[in-house]
Length: 218
Ligand code: GDP
Image (cartoon, rainbow, N blue to C red; front, side, top):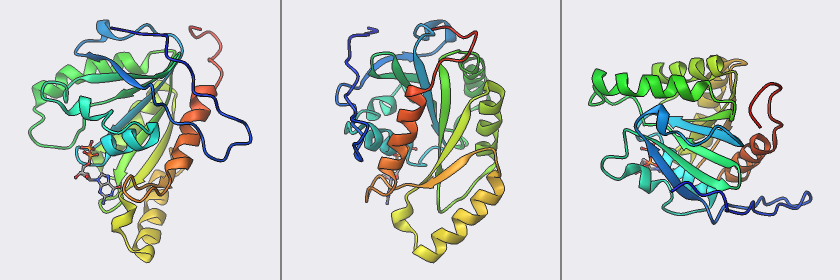
């Protein structure tokens, strides 16, 4: 099921429009850390509250319509879904949080997996989706703390900005920036009208290109 033969999309250094990942595919849905793919290459996590626009963001950034829908099929929403975008380049889609129906028991099954994920040498960054109309909420803070424990950077996508008026958005972004401080970078994003998709691709590309940490697995 785990394939490694997907070619890296060519990206010209002068290109303003970064390549998408047409060969992106789900490689596995893990219910336990022992099922994770080999800890090699580079991995970037995607997380956010349920309904924050995470699936739409994954589809928009990869340029592969319907890719993250596979994470939403019954039985997969509570798993860690690993997608391979190119050789040695993966994203991992974490379960959406913030809904009351995610029971304490379910959260207890995620905790060991997210703890194990944080220890992987391949984990390079976290994209955190935050609905721009809701702002930074408690669970978001927990994910940032998780990324800090993993020693990886956090880039927040302030989602669904097409629904905000310009002045409202400026105020909400200023507040979010104050709340996040130096713990995360922040950008406006809309899967619907395309705002920030290229900027998010550049961030993903930077993480995929980042050298492996000293002492980490190749
Ligand atoms: P997830 O639960 O975090 O994976 O969120 P989804 O990507 O499934 O999106 C949740 C809802 O928000 C869906 O109805 C989407 O159509 C909608 N949505 C997602 N992104 C955007 C966006 O950029 N703009 C608008 N207006 N709606 C969006």
